[in-house]
Length: 524
Ligand code: AHR
Image (cartoon, rainbow, N blue to C red; front, side, top):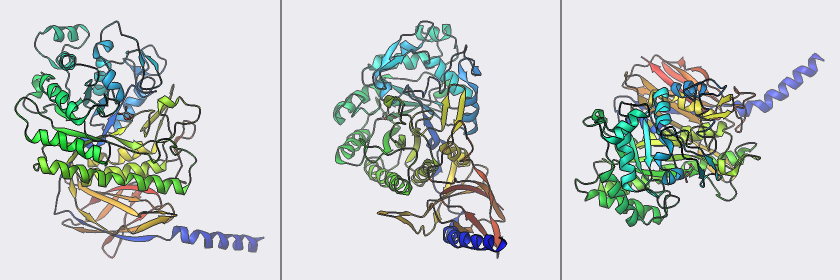
């Protein structure tokens, strides 16, 4: 019997050995050559009136049995506080270009339909005050998208005056009567959303004319935002790489180059989802390695897309005054069976954690131009960081990536060189590893390494210049399978665990598991 066990063990080891053989990777990091600031706004979130993104996800109402503060769920607030959300884009998305802010203030809310997303009732219970309360509770900032599609510059101007005026205007008094005497801060202002599609199907020239008018008339009156913390205006930008999108960027940026005092923009948005086939979308659950490799290969196209539009922006704005703001991105899969297709409900797997890390690293490498990004969407919609079901809440693998990346907020990029090698599966060839490094505000060096390969571990040797490194430790996120998910019933399948580098001959060596995302800090 004992002999049989030994034989079985040897057979198991023989098969396990190739899977565990670690690929050696040398990472050279020169901490003495700091690059651009990695703006904390790269880690923004997006919350649209779509499915259960707002209602149930954030808002349950003050008479709910779910613990809440003024109607906003406490579990969600605590989870979001922990990832230091820099800004939340609201109320859409497509919804924003049909939204009339007066529907959502005061004691009598206007009940409408939500034609973009399932045709369901929109009670307008969650309006301006509730959004600002939520922003305040999670310690974030407001990125408000105004209705440039079906609204007027005057309507948007009134909304901004309502939110931000400090002097006793009629709108300021109305805000005070509705419970908030102090002006609200609006950090970012979206001048429409996808105006080339659901935002009104406009030509670039038509959009430009409307956008100039909104840019001029929609003013922020908050005295605290006059000198510093000025509101940043984000124009609608492209949604892909084809000529219609490069034409769009050309049109807006060319006009920007010649802009006069009467209008201005601080950012141009870029929307890009990782979706192969819009008609036959891939599943967010129960997929295999082919779907893993395919989706990750697709997501890496973000780099070329950013480079393409950055090059156009460089022509008209070489000083990089206008930020590229990727304010909608993420994996977009088929709706979960049984869910309302208009609610864009999907699960979130280990694949999404890798996808998130790869994109955040791309943004960081373009940090001189890309100074904002908002993953779509924060709760219960698309690549969500949180899923809720009535009183239940679960944190997704993507949530943990955001948590591990907190030290990179407002850090300074540090160049990393490495030979990524390649991970091949079928027709797909991807870089085996990805890495990014930065110095946080307190001067500490942080390193992120993603091991894309789902089979092979990576043995990473850190070669550090400009820093006398003694140790490195942090957290690593991996899972049994590429499609492992966290569920309400089993919420801890994909959660980070501690990791430390071992020292060998004065070098720091990290042993990374297959399909993993790792963030460590280096101690001197
Ligand atoms: O995030 C879902 C939708 O995708 C947004 O409403 C729209 O802007 C985009 O097309």
